Length: 265
Image 1 (cartoon, rainbow, N blue to C red):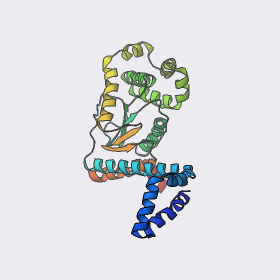
Image 2 (cartoon, one colour):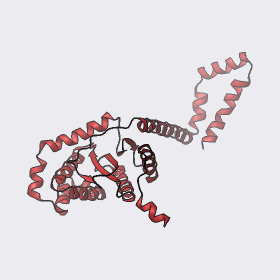
Image 3 (tube, rainbow, N blue to C red):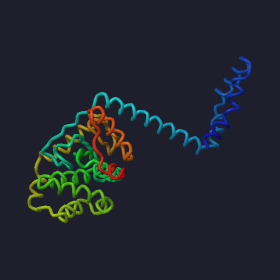
Image 4 (cartoon, helix red, strand yellow):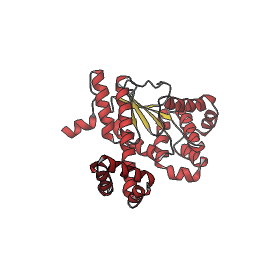
């Protein structure tokens, strides 16, 4: 498709390039006076032109993302790691993944599954800290419930994390009552949940998470930070592993991979 678009414009390019200077200037002047000649040629191939533009945009975004990642390998980001918050994984893990996410974002649900697989491959060396980058009121309320559950039990908070990502459609339809019902179903102490939801420090924590994400230049969810190096979007597992290998080498020792060891046996 793209080739046909280019071929359609080649005669015009050749005419300008091969003509004598005076003649070439005439062609250029004609095109300036009648830009519809080019527009008509492109208009006949709108789909190909759109694909070309989208391809260029994607290439630009990929190059920008890669450039930022390379800069972070040299100067890692430094998100706040509060040991009082819910953490999934060993406390003495050598690798910390901070994720900025939104419970109602479909890409975040996909990214959460990839992150879970990644952590399972490195059970002794990777821990996860979930932070919030909520974009609407329902998502912010879900984030608040998560933090309130973490006060009761970090494991309960992560059970809620897994369950709400799996039930996004139901939550969107049912609204806040569905969020609370899910917490109760998982075994939350209702009285304590109601009290903790009113704690101003929990609401501030969510705002601080969002402010931190923006300070790093993150403008979309999910975004993962692996020992200071970002992985943006619902990236494939291989990208997580590639970043891990590089940050581990800089620390002198590659993080062990339980799943990889099983494959070798």
